[in-house]
Image 1 (cartoon, rainbow, N blue to C red):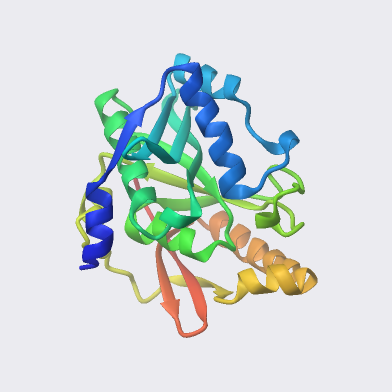
Image 2: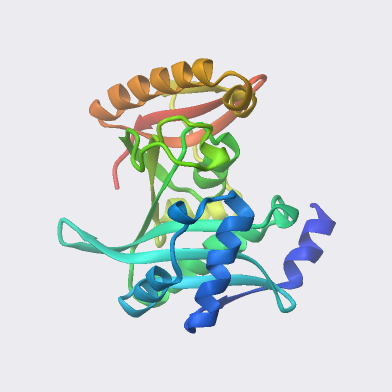
Length: 252
């Protein structure tokens, strides 16, 4: 166990945000974490709307210092009410210290307390650490791919590429999620398919965006084909110089 990270987590509190001042903190955190220009930054009014209409805003603090936040909206599709987690941000000096996990688990606690079964969010298929966290550590499944969801943005994080996104489904009360949160790995069938992304993809995005966009396009085609056949991403593997999404048949 990483005792340094464990001690850090013990000093961090996640609290719901309701005031206008709380929401302005989240605007500042976006710019610190992602370097957004003003036009791409979600304004404080939207955070207020989320809080007042059934979503939530959660802020992580170390002492009195805000270090991250989670923003979710109330949503409905096909008659099912759920939470859409639009953003989870952690400042750079606190990344890889368990703060993101604390924020996600706080989201789960809030969802269960208010009777939601599902939290969804989108994430970049090329962000492999994030993929591993979502699927392998939290137990989310993935069975939808959205090409260029937000258009091309000013954020250095997106490297000028189309903002393709996978949709994570986090069935917060399921036995799968319960067991994975406790550290139990799912059993994968021999028939599982895999979509591989080079581990160096972030460096490629920075140094050779054309090559990175080719990899992105190939992954888009593979995911779309597998999802059309009813497969879902249910695990994530690190293999040498690649990260691999593992897909197989999945029933709720």
